[in-house]
Amino acid sequence: MKPPLSPQLVSPLLRLLTAAVLMLVTPGLLVLPAAQAQNLPNLGGSDGEELSPQMERKLGEQVMNNIQRDSDYLSDPTVMEYVNNFGTTLLTATPDARGDAGYDYLFFVVRDPVLNAFALPGGFIGLHSGLVIAAQSESELASVLAHEIGHVSQRHIARMIGSQRQGSLLPLAGLLIAALAARTSPDLAAAAMMGGTGIAASRQLSFTRDAEREADRIGLQILRGAGFEAGGMVNFFGRLQAASRNVNDKAPSYLRTHPVTTERIADIEARIRNQPYRQHADSLDFSLIKARLRILQDDTPQGWREVSAVFNEQPRQGPRAQMLAARYGLAIVALRQRDAARALTLLSEIEAEAARMPALPVTSILTSLSIDIKLAMQQPQQALQAARAARVQYPLSRAVKIQFADCLLAAGKSEEAGFFLRDQAQLYRQDSAIQQALARAYAEQGKQALQHIALAEFYNLTGSLPAALEQLRIARSSPDASFYDLAMIDARERELQSAWREILNQGKKQR
Image 1 (cartoon, helix red, strand yellow):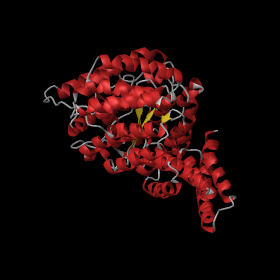
Image 2: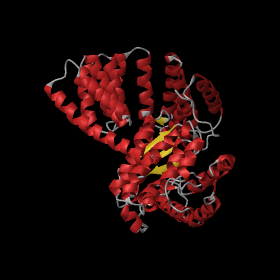
Image 3: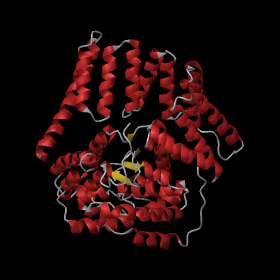
Image 4: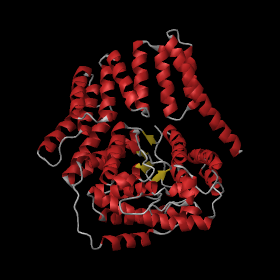
């Protein structure tokens, strides 16, 4: 596993990616604009009309395909489920937050200690792991997501690049994809970004100020609608402003010339000054996910040792939720170190303590940990029994469903796993983890053609079209490929070849 990026790499993959899409990065928050909420006008004009919602979504999907291929993209089902449930809570509480385009939002996390969040075209919103860890309450985390939702629903991205010809959007997507080289050559990527969009610098700066203020105002409405503390936005923005002073000197110049957050914080404070105080009780999941991300941020033996020192300090101070989260983190580290007995002891302590705290009930995250421990202790039948019960208790949990499939495979029930995963693949067509598990189920059944078809879908969903096409080639030559399989392979191959030709043509246009 690749170690996390250091704070010195201030031009990481997603920072540059965001800058290229919008050129709307703010030094304090380093994020892009927010959403349309109730009783607020849509700021879109003729520019936004020129970039259709379909083109905006397509652009976002192309960028996401490349983000998902990067090893710092956290596909961890437990983390994905938490951030998407959290983001959906904000959207559900304020229905108009989806905006006129009504995008199907996707929230995700990338491994990076730098405090950052960003919006991509078409409803994709990302968080750096460092930002989630730094949030001291769910209200603070909600304030960042609400701000980003505001940018998307107001279609700030579409309005920024909508005045360009639509024919230039695909080359722009190619430029965004090229930003993935930032991890190995930040200076080269930054230079490419500087001249890539053809938008006047003065217009960028003016639009940024308006968009950021509007995103803040809409974010506040979303926070109130979802029952979070509006003061969380002030607290977190202030901390981000302080953190930006440590990295700003090494940031690319176009990141340093945007509005300071002092003005934005003052504007937010003025808006909430006469609002009644509303207290929001954080969930236990919030503390557990922060602990989990501390491990995933540097998932190496050295990282485990360092984070264990942090966890060992926490039980001596702070709220009970933090104490339980520290033990949860230590249990995960124990599993990483193949000490399942130690993990079981820690889980028992967590469950005993949680039972005395009615406000902090046992969640699917702890249930998932219990199943992982059983699997690590070579108890597949007990793990499967627990996973079946978890499916009943948490019927909407996709993380539990993936874990249930893992337990079926561990218990030697590959045929049942195959049937289950095929149904899940129909429900969640964009979930690469399901396709990967399905390929494993077919492999254990000896179904070679179906195994490679599933792998082709996995590689396609993670943005690796050449690998997907190679898997289809292997599937075609498999001795057990049926007439139906061959027909499906032919049809899928034509679709993926067309998509690959389009990407190659974009690269030629860039040259």
